[in-house]
Amino acid sequence: MRTKVLTKGNQLIYVPYLDASLNESIKRLRKLWKKVQADRNRDAVYDFLTAVFELVEWWTAERREAEYAQRALRINGLIATAKPEPFAAVIAASVAPGRLDRRQLNKYSRALIYAAACDCTSKRLKRFIKEQGGINDCAAECAWRLRRLSRQCREMEQ
Amino acid sequence: MKVPMDKTLKLSVEEEFPSIKAKCPVLNSRQIIAIILVDFERAGHASRYLRKDGKIGWRATDKMREELFERMQEAIDEQDDS
Image (cartoon, rainbow over all chains, first blue to last red; front, side, top):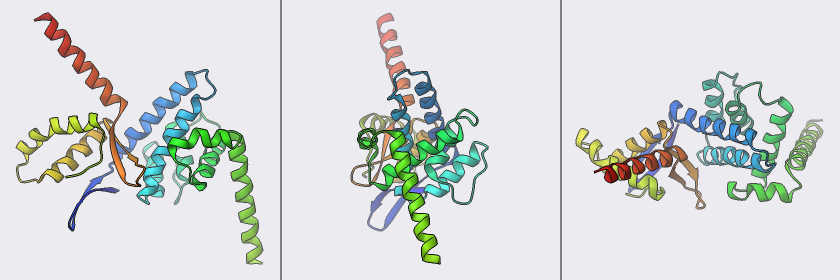
């Protein structure tokens, strides 16, 4: 729940990430989602996905992505699992429940998981996804890799 | 004291610094900055991000920029009136 911001000798100063601060981050994303929905431009969704990616990026740098994702779900009245997938959690928390269908949520989160697995940064996200053939192709690639991974795990168990 | 932050946020932190220092004289500058950042983040005026060097940086949000712009406009209007 803390970010180390300053170091001098052995002294450390931490800035706590309060629930109110986390909620403000989610509110910003919600506002952006509404803007994206109102925009007729097909590329507008990339602004939202980049903002989601950017948020999870620093959560991951702190190695607290699961904890923050859990808190984001809880604050927004959603059921939080023990270790939620951070991208899916942020999207679900920022888009009002019922507004985004499950398939769309999975598609966006898988595309972002794939980008993160390929060491993509938030600044390059839009270009990366486009180079890979778009959101659908990135999501499909992620799903295919996950299936292959689970098959390999099953084979190792046998 | 080095906290990576953008110019807008830095100016706002510097503006806020003396009032916190006056309220809590026992705190050192780093602790005061941490308090200001927490307050700004809680109000939705500042956010963290991952910098290219892998460190966490801070920047002003659109909300803060809009409010600063409004304040600036008000100041200009007052100046014009007087």
